[in-house]
Image 1: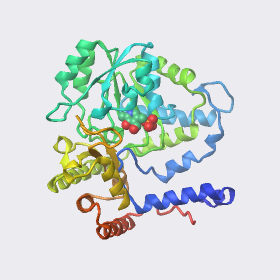
Image 2: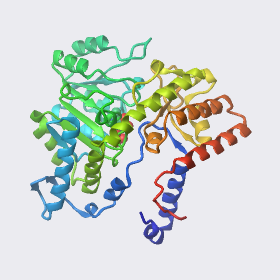
Image 3: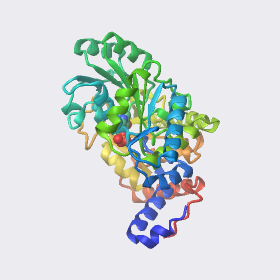
Image 4: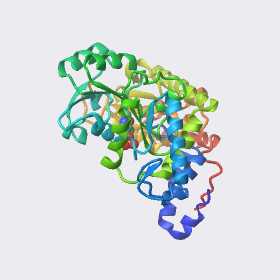
Length: 419
Ligand SMILES: Cc1ncc(COP(=O)(O)O)c(C=O)c1O
């Protein structure tokens, strides 16, 4: 990719892009919701589809000149359906939050009750948190995880669902390190006469790669982002059973969105094709293998890992046993070039801005080609940093080790951005 034109047009923006590329290249990205898409996807997002208005859907648009837009959107739709075994796909949502909003808009009336996992136990803001539209326009009730095991207690979910009678139950979270039992959620939803929405934003790539069970046929509707484990462009996706197709399409456009971002939809089409390949299956498997090794090594070195391990791409660690808060750990690790995020742990006695935990993930590092041995080494570096928060010499040494590891796994090696 040639960035010289940006350099000529706008030096300040160019400097920011250059700085960000260097930052990404020289640090270890362990935020579980981040990833590196292919250069093909990046190029599609910078393509001439950016210019085109195409309100409506393939074959039914409000503007002319749609031959190629229809072709690319149809490709994305058909591939999404095939990849996840869905009867219907809408590839227009701008991102994960608008996708969830569109589902609520399609299936619910204002004031209806929704039931999702509480944010404090790993749920997402759009699952009914008090600061989100989802609790202002809908009545939100929550389920959480078991106090001892920190696993979803399906009997408890059932009890709350039958008591509260929500119209929609949401399965899926941002910080749950274990597999979801979508069959159990489906049975609960059926008994409670609720719709089941699976928000697979975090695990879409794991489902596509066959290392996590699929949400269909148990879910009525499935939402996702395309930029996390799925490793595509920044965007959203709604899949559903055929009977909800019309309501969902209408909710996305014209109810909530205007013109679709066809340049991003082109990126989604490529991403879905990539995710159907054998290489992606290996990639998804490796994400989980890496994460298990990371969790095991961190535990062996005295970190309390929530649920005692992981089945997916993320690890939730309580860092208070190291005498640190989550915020301190996040800052400390950033200093040595390891990017993680502070996170609440279930039943956290601390506050969200300075919680007890950190959330670490392996999707981005696995995209760089790292495997189990790098995870073992990395766990050592993380623990060494957490054990030496005040030791500048040790921290400087770890920063150099991180840079060296990064240089062995070059990021976007063909991308030339000369500052
Ligand atoms: C489970 C879940 N749903 C929805 C979203 C929202 O996606 P976006 O940030 O693209 O709006 C996220 C993002 O982190 C998420 O983790």
